[in-house]
Image (cartoon, rainbow, N blue to C red):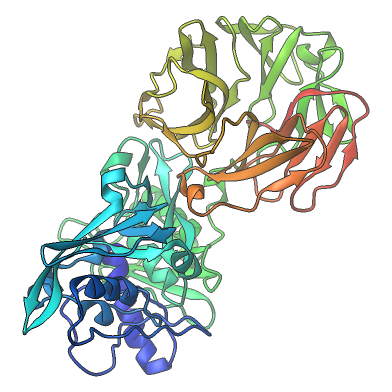
Length: 582
């Protein structure tokens, strides 16, 4: 994985030698010629001790041994480095990336070089972030070999840790680094894979302090000062307090402004709350303890709830349209008409979405040619905010932006409405002009996901939304597929957020329905979650990114509880466009 991660794990291994426990990844650097390797990752109950190079081994046997040695458990790089020439030991850098694969072919070649073909191969970058499937040429890994002291050794190898998916999955977990959106209004989770073990806090903080990568410029920002993580280690005491000692450059104040301090502690707290051993944080910068509001010496990892990427204190009500076309809300089994104009008389709507506070509703007219906005509980009139040809159900984000997708003869047109303004078009490569049949926008306003349809089937794609510091969306990245590849054309019937980084896909099967969780980074292609199979033909999925709200399958007046503590329910009457806020 990345250099920060490798050095963290080296420190973990040294601690392991003293205490008898520890977790880490391989560390790059010079080979250790003899003696026990201190740079290890211990997995309880598992031990893999690869064979060293055998005298007279052929080039293909040396390459096979090198790949096998990467699976050493406890994890270390000494075994793999023994298969390299002296020069390659110092130049080989597995910290640059990680390649995981489903199957590995037999090494082929000879004195001129050896190659190995991988199937179901994917790459992670130096941060541990998912980068998707390897292109066909990259799935053939090439090794240059040379004779050294009369024995074949590898003179050049790919700068990557190359391991089976099953090995990686047993030793790593996917968590998130928390940055802020461009305005500093909401936290944004960025998924990364990190090693399990007692150096988790150090790994997370080092990666967080390093900041977001360049490709996320304009999407997220960090309030942790740059260049403050040199030599960082984050010990966690027996009481669950993590000690974070950041360095400070000559131009970096040791005491951030109150606003910056609030935001950076929120980033640290949300990131470290994923480590079950951490309950609180004590922070210093440049050797000076940071003074927290109220004179506190430490802060809880539960601080900063107002920056929740799923929305802070958002409405938990369900909303939909009853058989008379009125907007109804409540909790099953009883949903009652709201007191605003959409609930006091038939509104002639075919789809509706309510903002995160549960105060404003946006409805698509029955013909799909206009979007009207009205207060949920007050007012006798609705305002038309956009017109189109075939508008999909809208979506709201934390900033109060209303997102629209219009299915025109020339393909999808994407825009958003802010306040009383006119729709602002957003060009989303890979979505604009395509056949989009469903879409969602993350509540933090940085991701748009959509179901893109063509003759080969449906695919879930995602794009990142770039904004200026005033919240105006200025660009979008090219959409990439995040749903696993299918062997035959597949129809995605519905989608819904399951968490800020997971989308539920509803597929119809023969006589049943399948609900498949899909990660927004596309890593479900290699690490698929167990799907939920429902015996009934479900029409829609009802879910939200708020932890604990659960997911339901909806068909007619029936609501089938699918996850968590959700229970089956029968509504008092048929409801369409049923959903949570957002």
